[in-house]
Length: 284
Image (cartoon, rainbow, N blue to C red; front, side, top):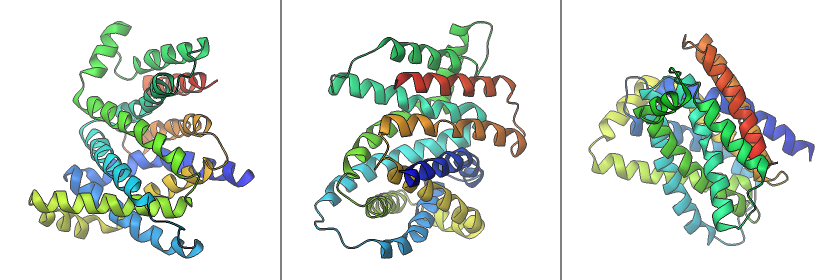
């Protein structure tokens, strides 16, 4: 069990840095090209770990991986769009609205109860979000947040994350996490290659590979290993515990946005703390 908690701790640290390095890769480049670089690098770095697993008993899971890979491809493109269009300390916390969507799915489709603590968590999520783009009062703050283009990209991305996590929690019960994550990386690479080919952006992607290959390798490592650690964690820890715990990385993101990207974070750090508290209440 302690290995699962160790994996979760690694996930928290890496997911905190992930938004910073993704933004650095996407600066002055297209979102699709940046995601292609990151996922290709991640696939290469993950491949040697397949030696630690045996071949799966059946390859029927690949159809589900294909569908999940498409969801995560679209999700990551919008994720990088958000980070490249807005400040990391602003749009980073919005990513965790995925927990709100995850709660909605479990309540509507799995008939889970909507307890007072969950309602309190939702209130805290919206209250914390109002500090991200502060205005004269809370409604004006929320309106400014939800009408911000970069935040809209991140909200849509967070919705797709909730869909993907629902599939993940079910898949790792029967498939080794390394095998599952690698299959997702491959399908994502395939979708991105086809998209770049048919949109005529392969040349731009190749140029980005040449300019930022070192940064791309680092981002790919952070992305794939962070995700792999989450998959290992949820083999022993419930998704409803592991995913909110990952929000602790949000505080790391906001602090790094200040020290690395020189963003102003005073009210956003408070927002991060409130959002973390709200997320935990959702799953009590």
